[in-house]
Amino acid sequence: MKLPPYSTFPFLFAILFQFSWAITARSHEKFLYCLSLHSNDSSSISRVVYSENNHSYSSILESSFQNLRFSTIATPKPLVIVAPLHASHIQTTIYCSRKHGLQIRIRSGGHDMEGLSYVSEVPFVLIDLINLRSIDIDVDNSVAWVEAGATIGELYYRIAEKSRTLAFPAGTCHTVGVGGQFSGGGYGTLFRKYGLAADNIIDAHLIDSNGRILDRKSMGEDLFWAIRGGGGGSYGVVLAWKLKLVPVPANVTVFTVTRTLEQNATELIHRSQYVAHKLPNDLFIFVSISRVNSGQEGKETIQAVFRSLFLGGADKLFSLMEKRFPELGLVKQECIEMSWIQSHLYFSDFPLERSEILLDRTAFTKGFIKVKSDYVKEPIPKIAFEGLWRRFYEEEGRYAAMNLIPYGGKMDEILETETPFPHRAGNLYKIMYTVAREEEENLEFQKYIRWIRRLYSYMTLYVSKSPREAYINYRDLDVGVNNKDNTSYARASIWGFKYFKNNFNKLVHVKTLVDPENFFKHEQSIPPLSSW
Image (cartoon, rainbow, N blue to C red; front, side, top):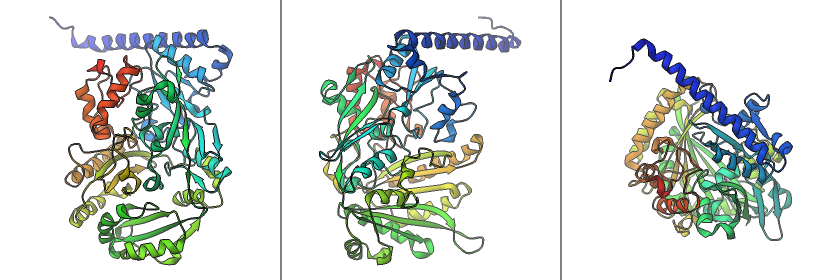
C-alpha cells in the first residue's frame, strides 16, 4: 500500500479532528434535545443543565475540583453538566446518555483521587449531585437517611444538632461526599469500634442503567452487597443511604503527641505496630509522619504525630496508656475531653466552637495530589523506617506524608466477604502515602508523582503480597486500568484483586446481572462477563 506524502498528514489530521468535533457537537445537540423531549417538565430540567456556553458551566465544574491535577486546560471537560434536583432528572440523563452513546460520570464531593468522578477521555456527561443533599435524622430509632450529594461534615453536623450521644463511623475529611466514600467502604476514628461506614448502611436508593429506582428489597441482596464497598460508578447512581447511627459517650477524649527523630520517633513508630491494633475497641491511635524543620537553623528532621480518639474519659485513657503504651510518654494534661462532634473539629485543626464550619464545602485546601495505599501484615523493622527517612529527606519528600491507620477491634470480627471491602482480620494497619503541592505546574508535579512511586516501590518488601492490597477510596491508577472500550477480566483483575481480593469475582457476577451492557464504566469500574 502506498502511503500519502508526509506533508499531507497534518492536513489529514485536521480533517479527522474537525470530523470528530462535528460528531461530538451533534451528539451534544441530540442529547440536549433528548433531555427536553423526555423530561416530565422541560423547563425544570433546563434549569439544571449546563453546557460549555453557559456562564455558570465553569463555576459549577470547578466547585468540586479537589485535586488540581485535573483542573488544567488539557483536562477533558464534560459536554454537559446536569445538577439534578430530583430523581427524574437523573433518570432522563441516563436514558439520553445511553441513547446517544455518551458516558456519564457521577460526582458527590469531588474527592476521587484520580478524578474519575468528573473526568473522562471519551465524550461524557457529568451528573453532579450537589443539589441532592438532604439529611433526615431519626433519633428515636437511631437511623438517618442521607442523600448522596451531602458531605460527611454536613451529616455529622445534622446528627450533632439532634443528639450529643449519636454518631456515624465515616471519615475525618468533612468535604468528602457520602456518595463516593460509602461506596468504597469509608473509615474514620470510630472504625475500630463500629467498622466501616459501609458496614452500617441498612438500605439505599439506587437508579440503575434502565432508569429504575431500587431500594434494598427490590435491588436484591447481591446488588445491595456490591454498592457497599465495591467502589462508585459501576452499578448505578446512588440517590440516598439509610444509616444505622451508633452510640458514643457525651464526652470523648483526644490527645496529640508529637515526637521527632531526636525524641525517639523511630522507636515509637516501630513499637506502635505491636500495640495499636491490640488496644481496646474504644481507643484509636493513628500516626502521621512528615518532614519538618527541627528548630535548629538549616536543619530538618522527621516528625511523627500520634493522635487519638477514646470513647471515654481522660482519667481512664491516661491510665490505659500508662499500661499499654508507656513508651509514648503521654502526660495527663495532653488528654482533652470534648463532644464527639468537637473531636472532628479538633482533628481538622478547626476552632472547637465553630461546628458550622463542617457545613462549608469550600473549607478544604486544594492542591496537586497523588495518593497511594498499602496494608501491613507483619511489623516493619526499624531499619526499613530508617530507609524511609532517607527518601523523605529527598527534595520531593518535603511535601509528602504517611499515615499509619491501625486495624484490629471490630475490623477483626467482620468477615472479609461481608461486604466487597476485604481488608479485615490479619492487618496490623493501613498506610496512606500522600504527596501534595498547593501551587505547582502540573508538568512540574510529575516529579513528585515519580517520587511517591519510588517510595511505594521501596515498601514492596514490607507490605501485603499476592496481591499487594490497596484501598479503593485511595484511588490509584498505577495499580491497573481497564481498556478504553470493553476490558477483559484478565485486565480488570490486575487492579480488581488488589482492591477487593476474591470479592472481585462476586462483584463481576453482580455487574453481569445488573448492567450487562457495561453502561456505567470508567478506568477502574467493575466489568461484566460479556466484556471478558
